[in-house]
Amino acid sequence: INIMEFCKAFNEKTKNFMGKPVPVIITVYKDKKFDFIIKSPPASHFIKEAAKLKGGSQEPGRLIVASITKKQAEEIAKNKMADLNAHDLEQAVKIIKGSARSMGIEVKDS
Image (cartoon, rainbow, N blue to C red; front, side):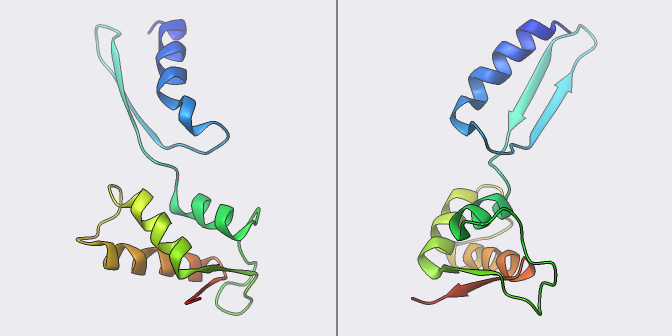
């Protein structure tokens, strides 16, 4: 494939995600053309960002290293809704809470 063409297209589509990990699905065809699908950053990235952490707990389930609010969990769920296997916002929030819990991050109601 034409690397310069790919890099220009990739950089253009990901410029709003500067400094964030972005999952990408790349398809390269026999004629050397390509397509790619940009997904939103992982929920764990948004959770760590909200909790102001670089990493999760070394002992999740036993050691809580930070907390986020329910409102923050709802915002993360809204951002990730398209990528989550959830029918509504309430289910999406439960998924985000579970992810936070597995990272040693508590979700507080306040």
